[in-house]
Length: 320
Image 1: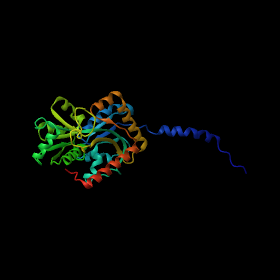
Image 2: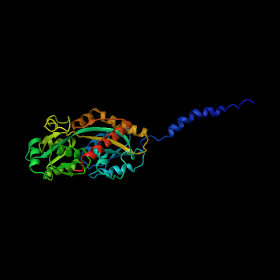
Image 3: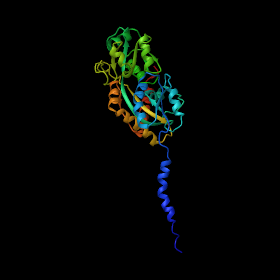
Image 4: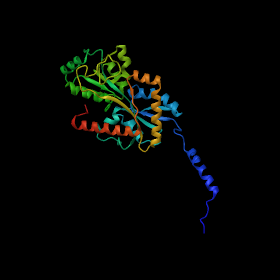
């Protein structure tokens, strides 16, 4: 008996089903995108995200809400994102602390590699060493001499434990052979306030937060960890102290399990926002160098940086 012929009506219906199913998929995002900044307002992470937010919002068709959940270690904000729904609507704007903390904090409330899904590397920038006008030094050599004459008396402010500004200070003390007191704050903004009030001797921070004070002559910039920003500020190597080369980096991460297409959509929105001529010029003026990687590339970058600092932490005391 010949095989039964398929129902032609069914064949006509099947090609129409795929578009109907595709149309049923919700467009991302359907609600505002929350970007958690684990630092206080006024710091490098906060400034960067707020500069990009309008362009990202225009491309996603939804508001971008910047939410500051600050502490000196970035753990509070990071844990909040790690425990959020993996729908792409809550993401973390990370600085170096996310990548450095595993080397200095033994019991984090999350697994940095397992509990986050990488989106992109956003930008990098040099760290700048500045001092208050009350400090009797006009260059790096004079500051080092002052610290050697008063071991354990001079202090440096950073944007928080595990931040690039923290490790720049650690490397500076190590390379110069001096003993400094580390005073961490919740971001570069409060750290600068402490410097201006005389609570600390020096500050390691980003040019985005300190540039206006430097240009106004309220503080004196002695060195920076890499080329970029104001060419009048020498690098540490140019000032006679090589090896202080920690850069600030920023990246975006979503909760683990966030689908790759969603992460790619977010990455593309931030990349396009940073490529707007006015925005890019503004970022570069503040010292940021936009750098965008794919989610897969940033996952590799994250693992590599964590492993690098874990190895350094086994050889050097990073809790200074």
